[in-house]
Amino acid sequence: MAASTGPREAQKKPGFLQSYALGICRINKGTMVSIRTDGYLYPARSGTASDSFVGVAYETVDNSTGAAGAAICRVEKSGSFVFGASSAATQADIGQAYYAADDQTVTIANTGNQLIGYAVEIIDSSDVRIRIDRAVQ
Image (cartoon, rainbow, N blue to C red; front, side):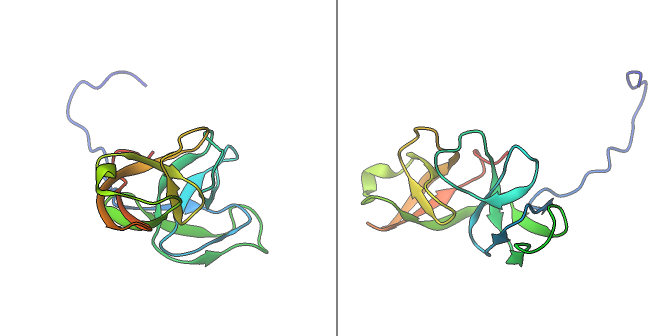
């Protein structure tokens, strides 16, 4: 395709909610989700820097008995969400980068883990509000 010589309709679609095809798995509403190297959506996990964090599941979808790609899940790609902390969170953690320990738990340990976002509020020592916007792929 040649370079544009005038205006064009780029067919913008609001990006706050995006649908992804599921791998063979179950995704629970409110959990962190990632795209793995096969191109399908799965629950977030630790030790997998090759996974791409794409947001928080908007709904529960069970494709554990289907074929990869047989179901879709809508994912929220913006905002802040409360997740469990794998170790005691303190006020000093505000602004700290957090990574996936599993699909509902975050950690400050970045070794091989995927970035989820940054702490914006400490609910208590066990729960942290994470802003995901800067980490979403």
